[in-house]
Amino acid sequence: MNGSRKWLVGLACLAGVIIALVVHYRAWQKGPPLAEVVVASATANTHVAPLNLTNHYTSDLDIPWNQTSYPGDDLAELPRGVQEFDGVRFDIQGLIQLSSRVWKKRGCRFPEKVEGIPLHRACRNLYLLHADGGANAPTGTTVATLILHYGDGTSAEIPIQHNIHVKDWWNYGSPPPSDTNTVVAWTGQNRATARMGKSLRLFKTRFENPSPQKRVDSLDYVSAMEDPGPFLVAVTVQ
Image 1 (cartoon, rainbow, N blue to C red):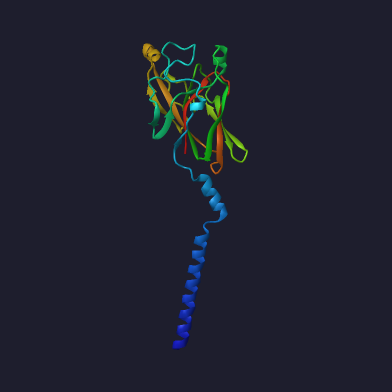
Image 2 (spheres, rainbow, N blue to C red; image 1 turned 90 degrees about the horizontal axis):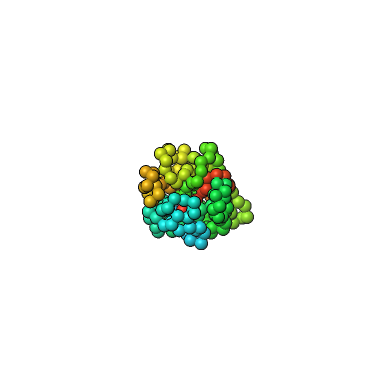
């Protein structure tokens, strides 16, 4: 190969490199494909965010919210404000007690559901600080349902099951729920449990969002009206 041909081959190679660089630069300027942008925007809010449930509480923590309870049967010992339990931050100010078959028979006036808890973001996981009480039930009994309302008009239901995700908030010595995403997040006492040699406990459960790519506009917390009465202290999303 003579010198002129070598020069032409080198020039052609250099031109190919320049063209490749220009193509990549233009693609970088345009950004990712639209489908990637949509997914990224839907899942961008993945940081942990405790929800403010102030407008939905049915009771304070420092008074017995069930008129059939023992004197001093409350959650006064539970810390207030943003607290971390088992690595998750929750905003704790009060609680949402839902009705149940037993509570209704005893004349307790609790709502059967609380609707429209605002969220307005996408999330992968929902963490609940919760329990139930008042009665036992067969393992797997759905005591409440969490309903997710998405921005596209669709919805999804997440069942909360006795002995799997929640148990009685009074600890009678039974093991914790069986779900691997549920742990005992808080233990404590009140005057009623102290008199009877028992203790209190709340459970933290991680539920996966069935459609993490969608924006969740709001949540509903709905009783299944079985015997145990479910209650919710806090919700955090991620």
